[in-house]
Image 1 (cartoon, rainbow, N blue to C red):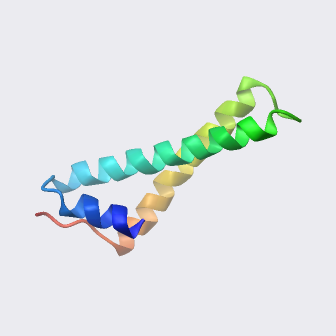
Image 2: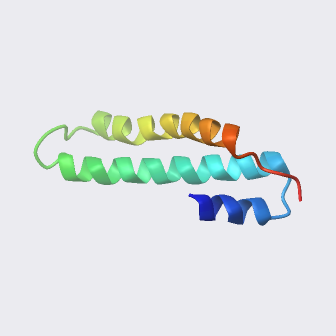
Length: 79
């Protein structure tokens, strides 16, 4: 995460764009991980699409809090 954070901070983007990008990356990564987990679990149980949306959606919501907490300690700076 620190490598990604340093890479984004080195870009000459405005600070709000940096935050949007890190929210997108962390949300997409969490949703993908949830989808892969659902693919493994749906073989034995929880095979409906409702459960897939839960496995994809909750990591996206949690990533918002995770990025907020991380950015509280590691702010972006204008280049």
